[in-house]
Length: 416
Image 1 (cartoon, one colour):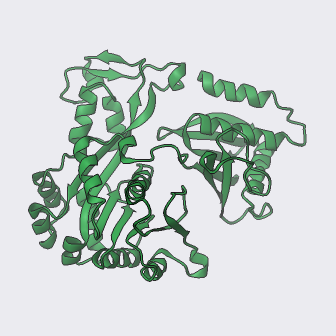
Image 2: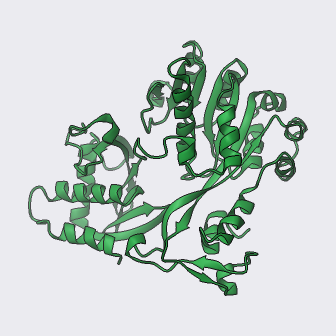
Image 3: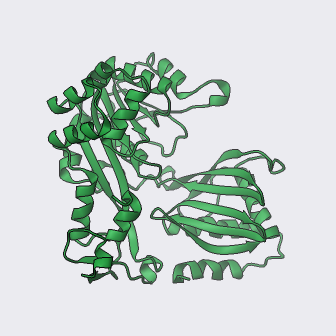
């Protein structure tokens, strides 16, 4: 057990488990520790004999503590109270909003934050789900408003950040950030939105449609959908078109209806920013075509597609190795391997780096490939011909420079 997780257990052990406020104080400690260690998710997983507390840190899930079954029920119930969910409803999923402050004090029982400036408020969402052994609860912790604010904060290479920044000045067209869940694409879109707002200084009409709103962005009229009353992304987009927008951010393109409405907006004189689930640039273009978006619409409506993943950065405790089993087939003659120390919670890694590929879709090579409806492999070759540096090449460069390990690349990108 790492020193940091040990300190969390020590703090919880010092609490009186028989006290009436035990669950309240334990949840405070659980949330505060997650924020301090940069966790993106906190899992409370019921088991046959108790409840496991897990944290996703730098994209990897790790178990930190186990609670007795009765205590686990009280912890989940406390979170539901904070999120204003129905505590007696345990047989159907629920979702609610938590607001907390970066100072470490938990939200009050009615879900409202303690006194703090807007800049200090950290957004969290609670999701509960019934399982065989009881209610499972997951808390998603969104990045604080002071982190990853602009493109320069994301760690993108200059040959990616520069063209994106230039395209943000366009008056029409769509820029899509793609990648799997947890790859940082929403963070990228927020950074783009802040870049536009800062450059415009109030002279452009910026609106967003999100599910949910993760971070408040100054200068942007942000809206959150509510499907239960018929206010979904596609419907919201159609109404937003009557709000005189110049820049529209859509949280995620999930279905054909939203994709069609988004591209209609991009063709009608609006700059559109959105995210999309896909493994790479070529896969994103292929999926959009499968959704029924005509090639001429993709050709005319798209400005650029980028795809990203996040890999863990090696801690300073890492060591160099030339063993074949550490290189895992990488061309580098030697690589750095994780060791583990208290600073990195014993994992050998601290924080993450982006693996990003991007192509401007209006380049002649890409435009022709899109219009011909070619398969994903051919689209990929066309993107490389148009100047795209693929993710696996950037991965090899990060391994050779010692910033990450070959094992981490294989974990994120797979056996390829």
